[in-house]
Amino acid sequence: MCFNYLRGALNGNSVFSYERYLTPLLSVQAEIGLTYWSLSENISLGIFDEKLSFDSPFKLGYSTGAGLRIYPKKQEMEGFYINPAYRYVRYNFQVSDSDLGETYERIHLNDTYVTVGYQLHIRRISLDYYTGGGVRFAHKSSQQSSGNSLTTEHYKSLIPLIAFGFRIGYYF
Image (cartoon, rainbow, N blue to C red; front, side, top):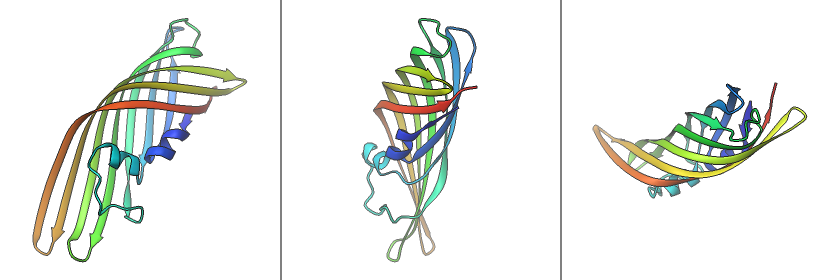
């Protein structure tokens, strides 16, 4: 079981992951997490909204993902690996403005990527460094209510994804 510190600090997505040994060559990884305020995700989508600030109330969202790790040297979840993976992330925001009314925003991210990494075990502690890339389909929906009117906007984009990180875990 691992916790990704770097991802939580940079993009407001604290993730716990679990890796399960299948064969000396393969393992599967599943992750689940909570999302909260993320300036880096908002900017990286090219949809920065000046109404959202660090003071904006956010509602918890969630993330989930899965991957297949391939260890070419058959070292049973240790050493160099290749990891094709998929991740879904959802951010939720609520902004109140006396002139504009209430705005509810949701950002949905669908990531498909491949990372290469190195996992090292020291006693029962797992250290995992990785980097890679892929594509991200981003969808932002915004609903603004003012008086009796409701306005809905959608923004969709397909952008490149750069993935990197560091996990610390415990194995049993």
